[in-house]
Structures are given as C-alpha cells and as structure tokens.
Image (cartoon, rainbow, N blue to C red; front, side, top):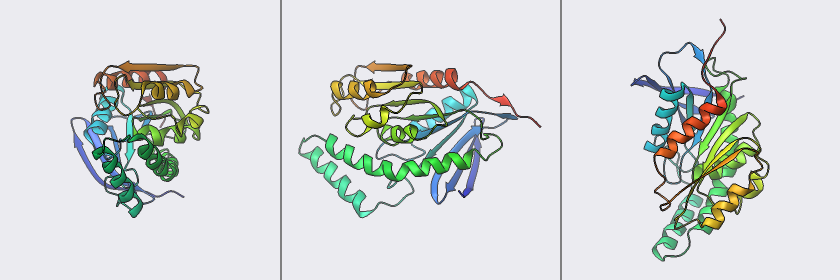
Length: 254
C-alpha cells in the first residue's frame, strides 16, 4: 500500500501546486485550478544537481497545465532537493568535480552514478503512479506520459521500459552505455532531444541511444549548441507531442 500525503497547497495563475510525500519521498503535483474533468498525467524527472521545483520543471509543468489541462508530477531524485545525500552521493559528486577540474571526461562518472540513482528511483516512480491514479481527477485508466532529459532520461528509460501504463515519452541528452538495453524494450512513441555540439555526449553516443529505441514512431530533434543550450522551443514541441498522443481532459462521470 502506497501512502500519498499532501503537505502544502498553493494556487497561482490558474495552477494548483500541491507538495506531497509518497512513501516518504517528496514530490510536487501541478493541476488545473478549475476543472471538473479527468485529465492525462505527465510524470517528469529532473536533471542532475536540480530538484523537483527547478525552473525547468515548473516551466514545463506550466506549459502542460495551461496548454493541455494535464496533471504533472515530479519526485526529488535520491540525494537531490529535499532528500539528504548519502556518503555514496558525496563520493560520486566529488569524483565528478575532480574530473571536471582536471578536464577529464565526465561521462563514465555520470553514467555510473545515474545508474545507481535510477535503481533507487524507478521503484519510487512506480509507487508514485500507483498512488496518483487513486485520485479521482486522474484515475486508473487515464493516459500517462513521461518527460525527462539528462538524469531524467537515466531514470525515465528503465522506468518506462518496465511500466506499461506509460504511452508516450520525451527523453534526451544521455549516454547509451546503460540505457540502450532498456531502450530496446520500449515501443511507445518517443521524442528525443540531442545537442549537436554537446561537449560531454558525442554525436555518435547520442545517436546510438536514439537508435536503440524499438519504437515504430520516434522523432529525433537535433539542435546546434552545447550540453546546456537545449532551446526553450523544444519544451513547446514536447507539449505538442504529449497533446497529440495523450489527448486532452475528459469529463468525469458523476
């Protein structure tokens, strides 16, 4: 039994923001302020070093709620946001900073650490989905998507590979080393973002992960620029992608 406990609520600009814990893991749920409809749900994963309410998360949520009437939920990843860091977290972060200072490749450390975090986070996202589908405004039969870039992809790809309730997903900007095997198990529609001049992930590595997805419908979005220069308009593209594949809010029966 998963325990969902709402801890705070605020309303701004037509969006209800509710903080919660599910089995003790902190998260946030954004929903339309005034709607008598049941609507699709988008689960999101934040990037490394960020948290559930990082501007990238709240900005994407605002687009999805205002543009589509969707519900959007994010968990703090292990060792991020309101969750304490373990000794293992501190060691991996120190190794990453040391590699960066020495101008050595960061990829092997990030891949290893993100794989560790994903093994912890994937069961938490399964529990989150179970709990949120108990809410009448979401329901057990409504469409669900996943949106995660960078570390959000490291968590999202193994989660989606094991979760048949996800029917569309947006990923991008990660190495194929661990994730390609999971991607081969995914057949739902995929939109994938890649930065052509990424200083950490080579073009060949990015393309290899995209190619690994078994989806009959998958779209590759390539933009010039470095790792942290993903254009903002790709967020609008992702919203259109989810609207196309998940539909829109539907009136709930009495």
